[in-house]
Image: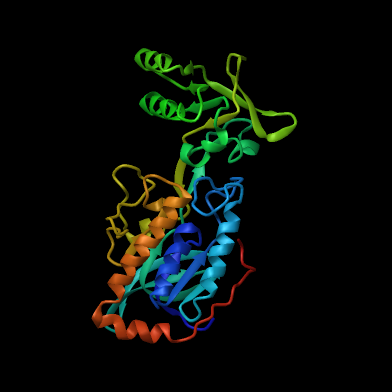
Amino acid sequence: MRGSRFDVIVVGGGPAGLSAALTLGRARLRVLVVDAGEPANAAGAGIGGLLGHPAEEPVSTLRAAGTAQLRELVGTVARLDGRVRDVRAVRGDGRRFFAVDVDGAVLRARALLLAGGLRYLPPALPGMESLWGRSVFHCPFCDGWESRDQVIAVSDEGARLVRRALLLRGWSREVVAVGPLSVADRAELAAAGVRVRTEPVAALEADPADATRLRAIRFADGSRERADALFVAPRLERHDALPERLGCAPSAEQSALLAVDADGRTSVPGVYAAGDLAEPVRSVANAVGSGSRVGKAIALELLRPLDREIAMEHALTPNVVRRRTPARV
């Protein structure tokens, strides 16, 4: 590897990380994108609602196109397949920087962008595995259009279930709410034409002709409810413990997210977050926008007049990072 000092190290090569790297690289900052190859929506058959991207094209297509675009930024952006094992803030040469351990190689960066996303863990129900991302989803705005005018079920509880069931009425007149509800909640949904099932779910049943297509929800009492699509509330968890090691404060609203300001700054100076780690509403479109916005904020910070000469010197120095493994897209 030639060169071990960067202006920004981006942890995560998904939509948010690639978008931020594009903005930073075009600002002639020296950027390294470290990608562990764990896209949150790898199970999805496509990306719905992303401008300019066909809904049936998977996230791998977007990642490949974004990675190819970054290759055009010769001398400013490099990419490395690997995992950040540790990171710590240190001082050297009169400056504060971050020492980043990538699979044993220690690199330096003036700023760190956490863009590794989150894991989306659906309810552990028999039959879920083959359906997740194909006919069981978490985001109506991402997959509601593809499920329009079908029988749509939604699983959650209480006020969240009521809210999501009423929202999904915008995509279908046949909506089934599945989960614990009060008498008042059930009455509100019934008045809106939403069927209610409060029995515990035992399993999801797929179409015998296509294991990716939901056919019915089977309840603990043995009864079944027909459904063509199901929207659930997945459990969210981080891919790593880097935020904790750095001391980044979690969001007060959702513990898996980080507390950030409008420009993606975390509670730790020099550490930023973009994409799912920072956005309360999660989608690929939001991740792309978040990466671009935070990338600009980092550039504005690093390209202050006192730092401009150093940044320009870095940008004009060719840098190539050899991949340890073939690029994953």
